[in-house]
Amino acid sequence: MDSLSGITAFIHVAETRSFTEAGRLLEISSSAVGKSVARMEERLGVRLFHRSTRSVTLTTEGELFLDRCKRILSEVEAAEMELLELSATPRGKVRISVPIQNVLIMPVLAGFMRAYPDIELDVDMSDRMVDVIEEGFDAVIRTGAPQDSRLMARKLGGYQLQLVASPTYLERHGDPTHPDDLIRHVCLLHKFPATGMIERWPLRVGDTHIEPNLTRALTCTTMDPLTYLAIDGVGIACLPDFSIREPLADGRLKVVLEDYTDHTGNLWMLWPASKQTAPRLRVLIDFFKDNILKG
Image 1 (cartoon, rainbow, N blue to C red):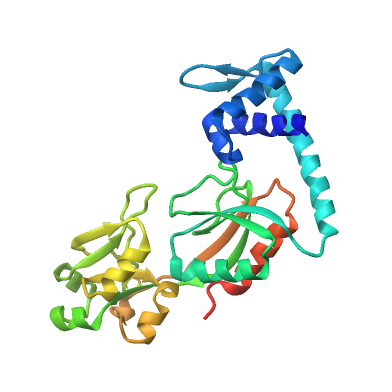
Image 2 (cartoon, rainbow, N blue to C red):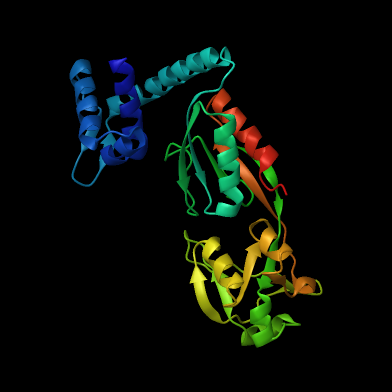
C-alpha cells in the first residue's frame, strides 16, 4: 500500500510539475509528497525528477517509470471498480467543478446528497475554465460545446439568455423598444473570468446579429450578483432563463427586447475519457441529467 501511495504521489507530481499542487490534490502537505517521492527514488536507485527552485521536470528514467505507473494505477482503479460494482450502494469520493449558479446547482447537489449519503462530494464552485485532467477532477459542469478530445460529454439540457429588468427600473427609465435604445440604459454586464472579455448580448435585427453600444455601469465575473442587482432595480442584465424563473413568475423581473433576442445554449457534464466510469460517478451524471434544468 505504501508503494501504491508513492506511485500516486509520483504521478501527480509528474502531471502537475509541482509538489505543492500534487499535495493539494492529495490533501497532504507538499513536504509529505516530497518525502514519498524521495523514498521511491532511494528504493529504485534512480532520480525521477530534475528539481530546481523554478521547475520540476522528469528525468529520462522518470519518463519511463511514469508510463508504467499510469498503467499500474489504471489496473488498480479497474479492480476497485469491479469490487464496487458488487456493492448495491455507490460510495466513495467524487471531485467536481460546477459554475457559480446557486439557483441552478444547489438544489441538485442537496437532492443528490440525500439520495446517495455514502458518496462524498468535493465541490469546486467556480466560473473559471478548469483543466479537468491536469487538476484531477472526476467531472465538471460547463456551458458551450465540448472541444477537448480527452473528455467524455453528456448534454444535461438547454437554456436561453434573456434581457431582463425590474418593473421599478422600467418605470424610471422606460422600456427599450429597439437595441439602439440600450445606450440610454444602465447595463449590467457579465465578464468571462478566464479572458476578461465581456459576454456579448445576443441581439439581432432581422437576420443580422448586432452589438449595440452598451453603457458599462457594472461588469462582474459571476451571474448571481447580476441577478440580484437586476431584481433590485439597478439596471438591465442578460441572464440565463434557468436563473430567473422565479423572479419572472412572481413579477420581480420582466423580459425586455424579446423580439430582438436570439440565443440557445447547452449545459454539459464532462469527465475524463481515459477513466473507467465508477458507479459513484455514473449515478452523479444520471442524477444531474434527470434533475438539472427542470422546472
